[in-house]
Picture (cartoon, rainbow, N blue to C red):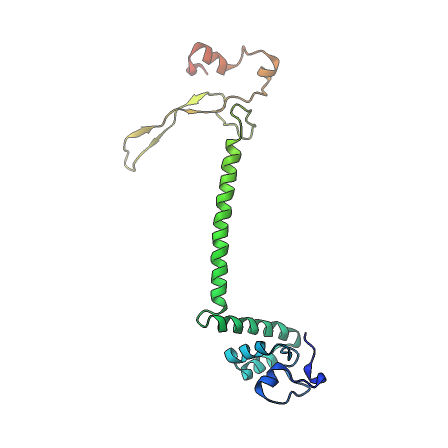
Length: 192
């Protein structure tokens, strides 16, 4: 809170602007020091001295400084932009935040894409990422196109990950009871 200007015999910025004597209990003195005459000039121009005095008298003393700072900010913004005031500044900042959020999302997507491309092929797939159809090497999927029983579209064969390399068959060296490799050797996938 600014010091009272009535004790230094210098009127506060409000009383000086209004060309009146600054009394010891002046409501403006703690918030409009004589060193900041433009602060009160803007507030008076936009809101009027009597309206500001009424507002300050209705507020509790600990709320007054924040109210004056808000009024001064709004008044300065209104002087700079008479149409939009601080709403114009808020809109500009919101658009900037939205633009930066889009840039951040794009950068995160690029980072994810690059991180996924850096994973070498052939690395073991953790069990949480393995497909429940992990025993099958290739599976064909089809889906219906249209709403009224239209033709079926046959999707190309999709490779499904092999069983994880940490299975007991790989570590033991015994591949005789591995149905996937048995099917590959016979060329018959239906025996799986």
